Image 1: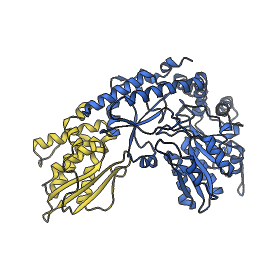
Image 2 (image 1 turned 90 degrees about the vertical axis):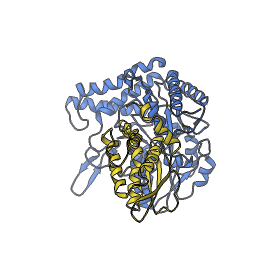
Image 3 (image 1 turned 30 degrees about the horizontal axis):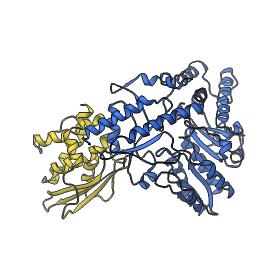
Image 4 (image 1 turned 180 degrees about the vertical axis):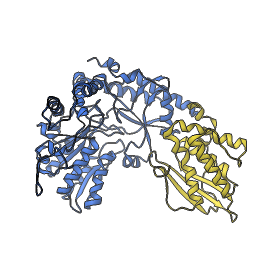
Length: 156
Length: 406
């Protein structure tokens, strides 16, 4: 995959016009993620219902196209899923971004997988992998209601 | 030496990066190395290697002499008074830590003030922060104006009877601001306050005369001056080096060791404990010769021409904004492209073989002041020419195309 493919339509589209941007109404958990190397910042707002289903998921922040697109696509994919399924999707994404080109998941349809796989090329730019994973780690933190900020220099 | 053909002396420029010729615009971070420097390092290891100091065999004597020759060259290059005022460290960061630690031990007590500026690299802030943590020092920051110049009147106002040292950069590694060191030293010395200068960005690019500047400490590194990594330099006035305690203890920095008493070595060995980066220090002499062969005036003239060309061309590109507009600006150009994050710029430029840096450049205080989290930065070295700047601008245009900017 070359660079132009990485910065393909999906990344630019989501990077420039992120979906689910802002604070959602009635969120009951939030978490903050920070990449001190580039100053990228993301804030996740999560609304879980009594059955532990993701009723709403939004984010705010500023950062590069890769981090914004990644957060945007993530909110699209995880919304409506149970916590358990959401965690599986996160795991699959983190595996893909580090070592695979494919997104292996039974919980997403082909369209959704294609969308998320547009980020897989980032692993060829190791300095940028943390841009792609920041929001996902922050979502884990929100789901687990951890108090401390996610810091890319501390996590893997 | 013909400056127009100088690129041919740097073997790295025959390499392709992502299929393109390398356009290296990251010299503020570290410079590339000319063949004479690479050969010297190789030669020393191949034919001349020995540790320096105590041994009395021929190789050791020769290596020791060469090591001291570099010290002499550095002394002459920055016009120090004595070669005893030149201390080798592992990098400029260590040079500053040496001063902060030893000066702090002897002179800083709770409530004492250290005056730095908003322009400082983390390496000229964090070592002083240690004194805030361990000795209760207070750190004050002299502010800059919107152009990126230190506001000298504000700096003056921040000096109190508690100010124990002023630490300031010679040239900003973000805005390229050339700081009026002489003026600051005069202000400080009127109140008997010593001044440390972080000269990392200055020594490779402008004439530095520490006697004329009259500063007390001056720190820089070899690797930014076309020399090897692993070598830092600390210039300090002799009286300070005699007065301050040693920094790192061990072999070579002692003259006599007994169970109840240790006498430290004379200068400069007092500050050079353990095995030094022998080969790299000896090689650094070749970098100084390289700089001298070009002639600092020629080098300054060339880099100024390239910088002005770059500023002029970058200003014609829509949505490019240059950060800072200081009175005197070196060839360090931080910029933004509206609508594209600096990390995306750096990744996309790299694809065209253009190496720049993106991030906060170890200056988070300055970026917070500018209300930015990151900037892109193109910085010029002696090997850059107008073609490089044309390639930079072309790559920026490609970047804008990918992001569909009008």
